[in-house]
Amino acid sequence: MALDPETFDALIDTVRRFVAERLRPLEAEVEAADAIPEGIVAEMKDMGLFGLSIAEDYGGLGLNMVEECRVAIEMGRTTPAFRSAFGTNVGIGSQGLVMAGSAEQKAEWLPKIASGEIVTSFALTEPDVGSDSGSVKTRAVRDGDVYRLSGTKRYITNADRAQLFTVMARTGEEKGGRGVSAFLVPKDLPGITIGEPEKKMGQKGAKVADVHFDEVPVPVANRLGAEGEGFKIAMRVLDRGRLHISAVCVGVAERLIADSVAYAGSRTQFGQPIASHQLIQGMIADMKTEALVARAMVMETAAAKDRGDDVVLESAAAKYFASEMVGRVADKAVQIYGGAGYIADYGIERLYRDVRLFRIYEGTSQIQQVIIARETIKRGG
Image 1 (cartoon, one colour):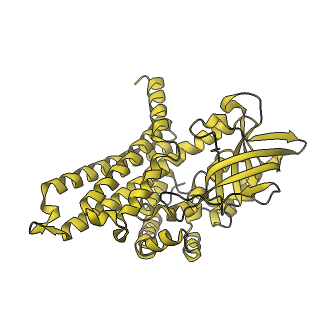
Image 2: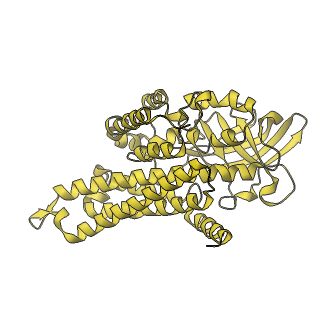
Image 3: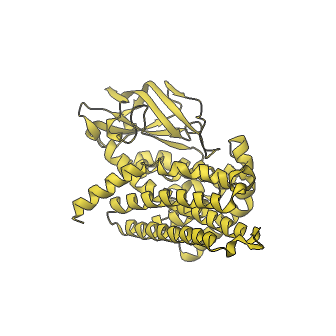
């Protein structure tokens, strides 16, 4: 259920000030240390950011999709790693449980997820399985009251901090998605090993790592839904996650535009601010127009999702356009800053690197194209 307008406006104002006053001053520190200060994480917990999408009955804020996207846009105005600290709890790490969990499973886990007491991760990708997500090789073999889970998951966000994994594993002999089931796997079960965090191009402070499962005894009670429903659950989770990421892309783009306009107004060449030069104005116009289009797509699709409409196509289109858009905006921002945009002092080169990931995770741009075309053909145009 949506918050009343006054309460939600207060939340947005709080998040906006938190980003401007607490997070942006720490961006260079997070980049250098590749870590988010624990004090900041504690503040995020106190603000309820870990429970944005979880119902109030379980201690969350219970935001609808429109409200969640507006918060994501605000969080997009700083280093994406800050949002990633709670992003899995809000999105892919919790939504399988929200969508398909039993009453007992929800009661056990959702309050701890909403408070940030535990961090969640979504474990689908494998060394040989990425875009072809229905071909997972991790196996879960029934053995009485447990499943013996074995396999390796790769590029798992927040794996180093997670206490609960939503794991997709093959339980049947059927090929493709029909043989995949979903499991809630606590980190403290025997047989789980977390790899070293990967060294990445950008988004320093947001860690990804391999997770290895060696005959892990997962209770049957921890299965989400029936056997063979895991792939459908994963796709529903990703549909929703793509919309959230689209909103983050809009926020980053709006940050880059504001910074570029400020710099162009203060940087003087040929005796006048470069903002007065038409070729600079042309770049600013393109940046702003694309960001406005992406924002409109995201908010319209979020409203449709809140109405209960089928938004598989629209979510894919929003993610495709917004993630590609923010890459183009970041490139133009570097160009407007010139040499200053290429060095670390101004933070523009950092955001240029950060946004590159948006075109890859939650489904690559090419996968979004496949989904958009498939759904368009299915709808007849």
